[in-house]
View (tube, rainbow, N blue to C red):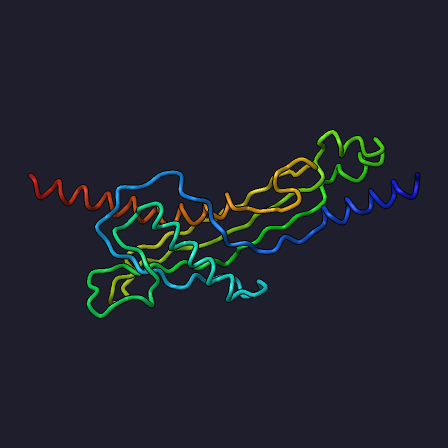
Length: 207
């Protein structure tokens, strides 16, 4: 019985000490915008070079960003920059570069002592087993066809959440909400700024 307890406890300890692989999926946008009369081409998203299979992750994240922008209806047209035609005029180029893009899981400080003192009752009662930490630091640069920078914004997000045995992300950890918040905040910032300019420029013309 004692051996089974130790094996079980050791297994839970190992599970809570995993390194979370970088994921790049995004949630669906919560609502649709009134599209701006713009064509936007998105360049390949840049991620930190230390990430495993970084080129594949960059490709997949780029596709996810394009799909997110299309579903959110930010602009009349959104596409990958390679699909730009010579006939395309007055478009904008989006470049997203991330210097930090990671999630780390560490054992919760209370996990080990309380699990022992309570003979694992702490675990089954929903006590915190691990802490997931997310760190994202990404910037958006918007350029015109002549590569002149028109807009730039930075979004940093540091978030921690405790995980217990019943948490939805305990077995399959995912910071999809954090990733989506970072990407959506960057695109929102340009969308709102450009919409403000259009609104006031149209107002001046009507005076």
